Image (cartoon, rainbow, N blue to C red; front, side):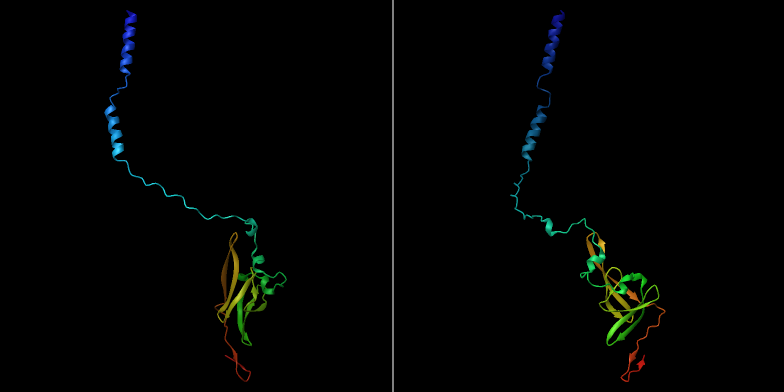
Length: 180
């Protein structure tokens, strides 16, 4: 009798494990719905050829080499440095402006109370600044400084006369006398 129950139990399990799980109608609906609403996809265009670039390291400067501002601004290493190149721009101030033979010159006062004359084109400051303009209001100096590693930018610095200084324009008349 035990055997009979065992045979019936195994037969019942085999009948219960059939392929029908009650989801046949859902599977059929999904297959039909996927076919009806399938989008039409255009094929991708053929790849376009692109320009090639061959890197040649001998034509590019080394990005890991430090460049100094003074080395970049001095094209001629045999040029002797002027006295005004020993001072920083923030330590100089305009003490006066004179005109001699039609050439404007600025009198720049140094921290050690010296007066030094500068004309347009003279080098001033420790970063190779060049005097670009002189007027009775002051002096404009253009420098080339390092903005970021490997990048340079030009900066114009204005040295203005002090507000309390009395700088007057004096001219010579035809007789050679000075007048305001």
